[in-house]
Amino acid sequence: GYPLTDIFQEDDDTQVIQMALAGFTRDSLHVETDKNRITISSQKSEEDEKKKGFRRIAKRAFTKTFVDHQNQLDMSNAQAVFKDGLLTVRIPPITKSKKTTIKIK
Image (cartoon, rainbow, N blue to C red; front, side, top):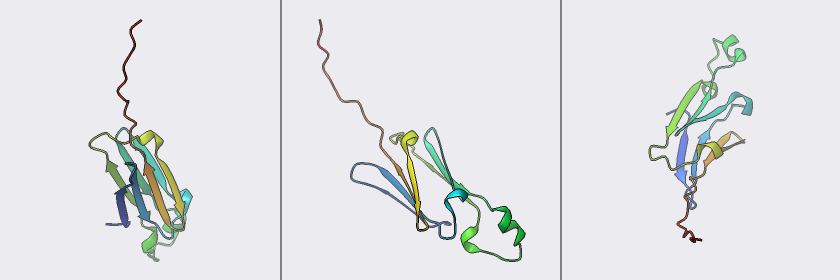
């Protein structure tokens, strides 16, 4: 599928989404979260629309949505970095509360 995407989990259970987006700029990319979903997209710019006879593969519009079906990721603390044509989105796991004993007074 387009764009080329890799999804993996780091040792600390952080979910990582990487997309190869050569030809795009940081301002042309959008990353949004909603509940247990994260959507990464880019639309055609006005400049691309003016060049209708010129097809640029690296500038096609796209929308990809990824769903955390088990609700184990903290979407509100996701971080995205775009460098050298590679978008990297890191989504940390939800911190689980630890078992504690409450002292009765």
